[in-house]
Amino acid sequence: MKALLFDTDVLIDLLLGNHATQRQVNRLIPGSQLFCSVITVGEILAGMFPREKDDTERLLGALVKIPVSEDIARLAGQF
Image (cartoon, rainbow, N blue to C red):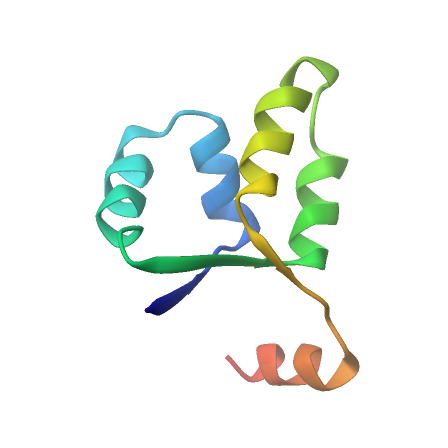
């Protein structure tokens, strides 16, 4: 099983219905475990309008959340 880590930009594209992003993600999803960091959760919720709550919570609920430590943040900064 492969792992996919979604960043804020990809999740926003999905929530906004960006068809190109949806097609690409749909090709990658089969057989994958889906992740995002807890920082991404905060970023998504910070930009969410009240009318988007249900769709946003549904999308976030489908992802495994990765806690972020300083070591992880430093590693991410190297990418």
